[in-house]
Image 1 (cartoon, rainbow, N blue to C red):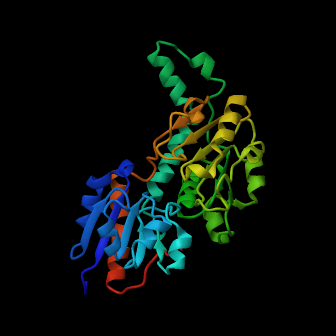
Image 2: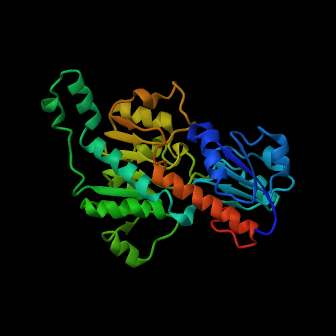
Image 3: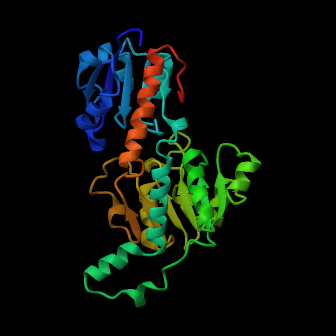
Length: 324
């Protein structure tokens, strides 16, 4: 490292706050690191920051305007929707994620299958019934299903989506996918001869739909009431990407009306969700608090990937994973 740089580590409280930030700061020897839980918590540190590392904490246009020395915004995640891309672009400040590191792909894929299996095997109602001394087998056996032979529709076949599809092959599932562009034929062959289809066709044909698209203006409420109506009444929707990809009220409507068999949700809009979120009381849902990507192993990989990109920038090396 040729010169001392000021790094502002902004770690949202619901992903560890200052405790997690202190551990991250320890990976930046030679840099002057300030750990905060909101970007404007320490105006002086923001004003002097050459780099901002943010873990799900908003970096707004006002924050960017208040940081005249800013050279890079590094997201400690695959998603980057919590950074004002337009404001960063106007200042020529690159925004980076950790996409090429694959740091989160293992656990997000595992969490996706945990939700799918919980839905297929009716684990939550089975457990609750037994705790209440209710032998629920006669009632549940008609709704317990297998993954084998079912069609999985993967929305977004990036690193995480591909990891999910790879696991689906082991479960003998048929794979459809939609993405910004078709993947190479050899990749499709490796993923059980996965087929590239338009989104609406995928929704109509799939037994399980798993969302792995980034949140952008184009994908916000991608799964709305109109698209939910395309799903089979026996289908399950799984979202481990971003809560705002789905119209949450429309999903609650479908679950309550019985036009959708169930949903597994790990992400919400906003996070944490408020008590007004109808999905908290909707039938046949399995919910988890954005735990995809936050195992002990994953957090280490995420921190190392984010920090290494900043260290490389400080050393004058090209940035990786520039998304804006």
